[in-house]
Image: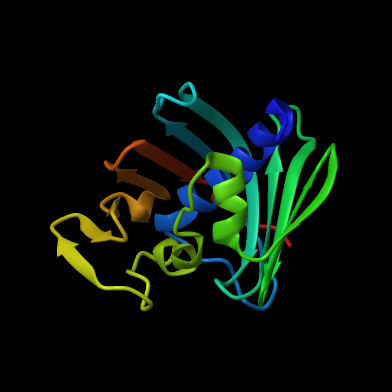
Length: 178
């Protein structure tokens, strides 16, 4: 995968991951959740550290949804859509199809990330598809510590300590548009 395509795919994954603990879940009837995200993936022997920040628009559930990444100038950088058995990533280089969100994340980052859990994390709760451990300010699930202490202010932090370590931050906008 080329560096620009990898960056766009990473941005899409970042948006999804960062949304994991947002205060307001997307409206399943079609409303959009808007905000800003930041992602950092630590270096490995195979690749340098990666980081990005972008605006995002998200709607849907773990089964079906859409995510758009927006540049600081307001242009769409990448869009991901998913449904049963399929995940699509649209960048300036075209559209790529994947069997799942895990496969999309594996291609973008070299490893699968828990994208199916994100809709529940977005609502501030653990995903029902895997065991979790409650923590004083959030929970741990699938190797991620999701800190929900600032959800009322529209902020989330999530961190995976396993190599490569990943740090996620989200800031939601107050206004939502459809």
